[in-house]
Every structure is written in structure tokens, then in C-alpha cells.
Length: 453
Image 1 (cartoon, rainbow, N blue to C red):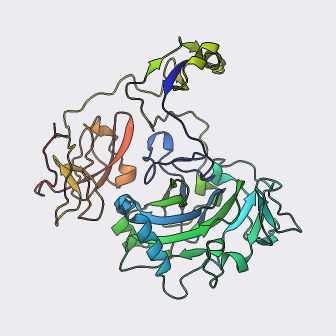
Image 2: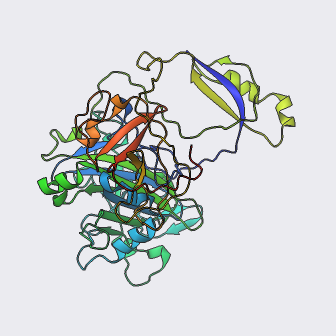
Image 3: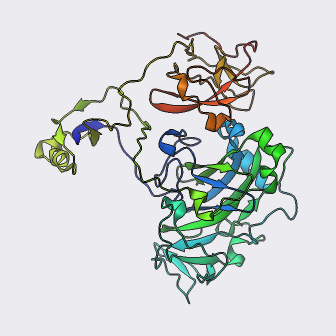
């Protein structure tokens, strides 16, 4: 059973610049930078798993006049996503690739639709149009279901193990998406590179595609593979097995939308391949992630209504004539369970080990350690030592939630005994999972403690 109330809240936004492939902000136009927090509860911490020679399908809404990019980075290097010049470095990595590194022709992006596209392409016509704007022969062919590159499933879209389907796919015209002469935005060439960079050693691979027609009800897609080096024992020992695929949609006239796919690297291929995206256990789980908060909301303006089946009662409250007098107020319906499922703990207990003080002031990273230290724990700061920011965690609850699946270490149930400086742990506090790194106890305190509590 659930209940709903009508609240006055801040202005809301809507959009359709998102990934269709399941990620942290699946099917939502997320503005969180660089992406939303990782949720480890209910098995949601990993979206895919791959072994050598295997790939992950990544598909996104082919919307607006936007440039889409994908970047693959080991989770141990996640701090680079927070760097204020991340996109500049990403573009430089792509544009500075050595000759022959670009694989966008051999491994192209495709266009897809669940059925017939509403933008013009068919089996015989390859012009695409939207809003009165057309690009002639944007596509070169439609892929038959027998083509080796045809994607015959929707497992990546949150349907693991479901019956395969017959979606449609088109290949982009190389003359349009691989133009290297005109240098106009309309013909900005596709890029797909994966090389070891001395300047950006944290980048594993990067992709960049410019959208040509606003076909936002369809999608573009690529089969993203990982370089062979990521599966070696040396690389796994150095970087671990958790990798992040960062998605972004950029435009000078629009917001930058983001998402992230969490992928586990395995030493052997996933067999059968359908399990790359996991399988359903058939049981229920509970996951709660707070993406926003209403601090001192203006008012709760309706009684609680039964919303077990729908929230129509609250909607009727919103449609009352007296609401028209509240011209400057935005309304929202808040639906919450009247009782929590059995899998939700009755309470969160506080462990004796706490992070103190809670750093709220600005800070500068030390030359020895670019992370931000607080009482032996830290939240990793930006990698640029001149632009580090202090974002220390709140007080930690239940150290039993230290996750060995992330760190690779089996910790004790009530402490982090056995952990060593440099280890990455996932702690859960205030019902939210956060990433925490340990720093040496003797490391200088990088925080300016002025204003801490």
C-alpha cells in the first residue's frame, strides 16, 4: 500500500537525452555531474560483465544537435571524471590519437528503431528528416537480420533473458559521418580510439559522434569492446576489474547530459553470452537512491490519499480551481510506501567508528597525496592538485556495508581491518552508497579545517 500527498516544489525539467542501455540514470535525462552515485543495493552495482573478445551494446537517443561521447576508465581512476577540464582532455585524447588508431570505420555506430522509424529511413530510402530538416542519404543501407553486426536483442535495455526481437538497424553513410575535409559541424567525423596515452594514461578508450538529425524517438548504438590489455593479469592487479563507461551528450545550446555504465572485466568470456547483462533471479529487491531533496518546502497542501493503485486522488487535488490562485507555485505529487517491504531494515544503527571532523571548508591537495584526508578516510578529489576540492563523507553507518565485491578484499563485518592505504571501499550511510578511499594515517591533513564541525 502506498500514499500520496501534493507538495509545492521547485520548477521541474523534462527531456529525452538519455541512454536506452541500462546505466545509473537509465532512461532519464540526468544533469548530475559527472554522473549519479553508484547504487550497490539489490544487485544494481553492475550493469554488464564481459570477457576477452566480447562487447557491450551502448545505445542512446539520437537527439538534437548534440555531440555524444563515451569514455572508458577504470573505476580506480574515477576521480578524473570530476576534473574541471575533463571534456577538454577527452577531446584532446581523441584528436591526438596516432595514425591508424581510429576504428570508427571498421567498427561503426549504427542507427536503430524498435520498428519502423518515424524519420524516413526504410529498406529502400536512406534520407532522414525531422522538424523540416533533412539529410539526404544519411544512411547507406539497412542491416538484414543475418548481418554479423545486427543486434537481435534488447538485453542491454534492461530485459535480460527476454525473448529476442526484430528491431531495425541502418548503417550511416561514411561520406557523411567520416568526412575529413569540410570541417563543418554538420559533417563532424565520428571517432573511436583506444590507445595508451602518456598524457592521459587513465583513459582506456574514447568515442565521439555528432548527431546529424534530431531522431530522438530512435537510437544510435555501438558495440563497445575493451582493449585486450584490460584482461591481462598485470592490468587487473593494477586497476581491478570494475570499469566505468561514461556517457555524455554535449551541445553549446543545451545542457550536458550524463550517465554511467558499470562493467566488470572477467578473465574468461561470459558463457552463454546472454549473461553479459545478467539474468533475473525472479525475486524482489529494494533500492533507494536520493537524487534530490526539498529543503524547507513551501508547503504540504493536501491530505494523504491512498495511492496503492494510482495517484489520481492527488492529481485531482492539483486540478482544484483554488490552485489557480497560486500562480508562482510549482506542484508535485510525492508517492511513498505506507510501509516498507520486508527487505528494508527497520532502522540504521550508528557504528562506533565515525568520520570526524566533517570537512566543509575548501582545501588544497598535497604533493604527496592528491586526495582529501579526514580522520584516516577520504573522498578522492580532482586529480589536478591545483583544483582539488574537499568533499569528505558524512558520518559512516554500519561498516558491515564495506563491499568486498568492489574492493576485492573480504573485510570484517564491523570494521575495515585488513584494509590498506589506497584501497577502495563502498560505504553506505544515510541509505546511500558512496565511494571512499583510504589514505595513510601519517599523510598530511590536506583540509583547511576552518569552518569544520
